[in-house]
Amino acid sequence: MKTAGFRLVLGLLLSTAYCLLPTANSQTFDRTVIDANFPGAYQVEVADVNGDKKPDIIALGGSTCAWYENPTWKKRIVTGGKQTPGIISTATADIDGDGKAEIAIAYEFAMNAPTTGKLLLAVQGRGLDDPWKLVPIADIGSIHRLRWGDINGDKRLDLVVAPIFGPKAKPPIYDDPARLVFFDGKEDIKGGKTTSVLLATRPVIHAIEVSDAGQRGLPFILTADNLGVGMVNPISPGRNEVIDLVTGAKGDAPKRGCSEIHLGQLKDGMRFLATLEPWHGNQVVVHLGTNGGSEAPKFPPREFTRNVLDETLADGHALWVTDVDGDGDDEVIAGHRGKDHRVSMYDFDRAKKTWARTVLDREVAAQDLRGGDLDGDGTPDVVTVGGSTHNVVWYHFRRK
Picture 1: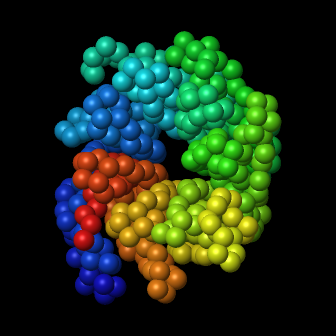
Picture 2 (picture 1 turned 90 degrees about the vertical axis):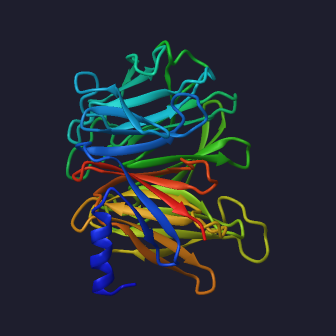
């Protein structure tokens, strides 16, 4: 599988818009190019936009947010350059249960202008082709990542907002911490009437994940930042617990800590942290949890062991975790956008206690990875976007 001939054939196959490819464990997948002309593609989501119970694809980049309707993948523009210059993140969900998703949009992001940044909510029109109503929410400097989750346990979706820096951050260190906040879903977000609630302050927050219910019955937020991975545990209104789980890669700020974070799980129920390290770094890392003895798996565990799966990435920026082969162990899928850009999958070998890498795609400068069962066959799919390669690509895995 690692011969020069195989690499040549793989490169030829990936140059087509649709193909059937083998992975290292003889699993196959289809590669479908959803869009070959999306300049500056930066982020992708998988969510049901139109309420037909089929997950759609939402992509953003440049100054554009667009969604692709499942299964035809017809492209519709949500916002454009006049509305959302410097677009950087979206979060899509049906927040009021009317069957139509809303899209929170972060824009006017600039790396060295930490006081600029805006947040709005895009609300669908009556028909699928009607313009979206854009509702201003707030000005948030260095706004960078958005996620929905029921943070306070009131059965309503709240919007978690992570700036990357604080307002006084300056290069090269960017040492003013970012303020992680959420907007309460019980307020009138669709009407633009809502206020932010502080969750935590962390230095250089590059990524966040709102995870499943913790021990207190509330979700927790994981941050990938210059301290490593932090766990923000809402306890009660106005009171949060912040735990440093792992420190990530060593180094001088800001090239330290973690850059991306997703929570995975092995067949025995033990959780792990999948990260890219350091900030915009070269390493794919799995931090395996252990509780010792025969105790039931829980999160967070007593300790983590750091396992570097790959250290050949150039400007690592894309990460996802899901079980595509159905063996009960989540695979780690990662990509980078720099030199020799690619998307790779790392599969846990239970017998050897190692992770085997398979290069999935060399034709995408990966900026982001997300997943979901796009065709309803029961197997998770993965979608990526390439910035300099201008593409939105769907990997449809086929189990043995």
